[in-house]
Picture 1 (cartoon, rainbow, N blue to C red):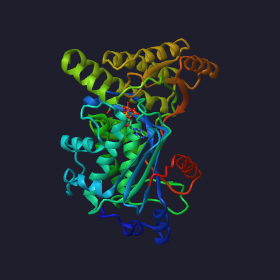
Picture 2: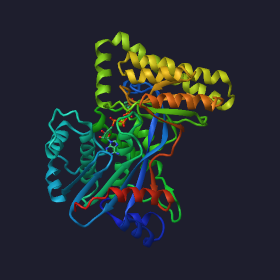
Picture 3: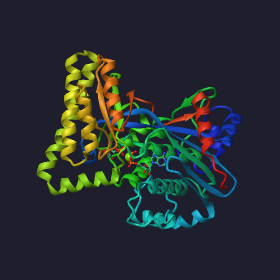
Picture 4: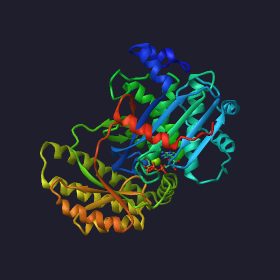
Length: 426
Ligand SMILES: Nc1ncnc2c1ncn2[C@@H]1O[C@H](COP(=O)(O)OP(=O)(O)O)[C@@H](O)[C@H]1O
Ligand SMILES: C[C@@](O)(CCOP(=O)(O)O)CC(=O)O
Ligand SMILES: [Mg+2]
């Protein structure tokens, strides 16, 4: 179902009246993708073990407009970055991104080197913020090379409710939104909106394509991603992820979670590389730890089913114990941080159980809230965490994956946010 070119016709063919789609495309499209919370399996999942992850109700929004000014504008207000390039200048990179008919391919070292030279990043730079620009250029040029003869002139703005670099999958939400918007702009996936619908999702085949391209963007930001984050950003809900196999977890109970951001910055790429080095150095010591984390994910999956069928206080006690054990394992892998130890100690002093989520090294932790927990206990824990300089908020798990926003109050609100960031560089 791949359609070639920057193609209004393909959008019109999909469903509905031509006037409706032409109007929508002439204006612009807004898509959004959720952040994620990994319940269990971070890091181990990079080494082929099971992870359980859920969509988070904090999202990244992207607006794409096709324009006639012969430029590409990329506005990233979360990073304070707004760049633009002449399309003609971007064409000079086409030798590194030749047209080919194969599916998405991993970014090659030569392509990454060419992009770094183009953007003016030192090749050894560990600055993760710049990686968002590289990931965009990679997706723009690769998707352009695959689906169109000419590169399009575009204006793109991405704004997120998620903290970046805090373990909540902001990089994946960014890459999933970017892949969906660019694929839609090229007609490689349809424009799924139905008239009067508030938001819309793509077919499973299209979601698969979006996910595969987003994974390539994640490779630029993470180095060696497992693919779990982009899978949640694409499909949402609650997923079991194992060696690229994505299974939707059916009938997951509505778990309540307290999310805490220690605000200690860290880079997923460096933390993942650190774990790899440690596993290579001490395979006999650390492989059993990864296997134990795998067993924790599987036990958690079993208990979540039980909570649904036959909820009991014991189930929640097991879930709490699994959090505690996994947090110790993650410390053994070297991805803990004193700020996370403090988070766990503070919540433990209120009888609550926490673990880091995502890459660790700072960033966010999650605390399980049993259904019968006294609200005064949660409030006291929150106050103490805030006094440590942390930010916390309560949430429950399972937000929808990548969505196109058509007619909704949410779309209007997001538009207003985008307008505050609009710059007049063009
Ligand atoms: N809204 C955004 N705008 C621009 N870049 C983003 C955005 N969200 C994430 N990124 C990119 O992702 C990086 C953070 O990714 P990462 O270190 O994997 O942490 P996490 O995915 O846990 O937030 C940022 O440094 C930036 O390159
Ligand atoms: C550590 C890891 O398991 C999750 C990283 O998540 P985040 O980028 O910290 O949100 C890495 C991965 O799965 O690719
Ligand atoms: Mg990430």
